[in-house]
Image 1 (cartoon, rainbow, N blue to C red):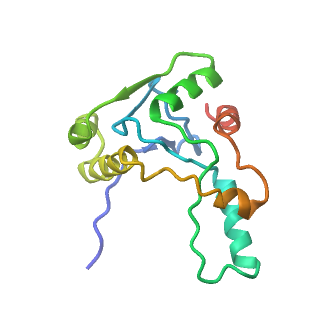
Image 2 (cartoon, rainbow, N blue to C red):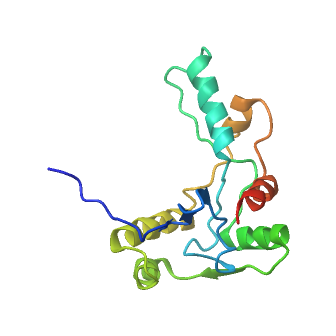
Length: 162
């Protein structure tokens, strides 16, 4: 039995523009960051920092059986993310925060396939409860330097988003 797959519209899927072959920066396409995370804090970190941490764990001794909680040193809410994108891009970017209970229905009404809307709503629910927040410092310790900051990540993303 095969697993059903949701096919996105041609050229577009969750912020990824396949026609240009690059990820678009959320907030710039519609001048808004949307979600239902409320005041939930997010300890995001760059892919490069995660890859570097994984390389350390896989190639150095002393990590067998260890559990790490990886996240950036700076955490932020979606409102703070919108403000940071606005500052980096030099244009207003709003934050539209809606109730978690309504998020899947609103996302589906905006055109997201139902199953994907449910996944995104569940992620927002987790963010609103603080599930994307960590102050473990594990990432910093593993890579031996401060993780990339939100401002640094946005500067790079703006250079490559079109």
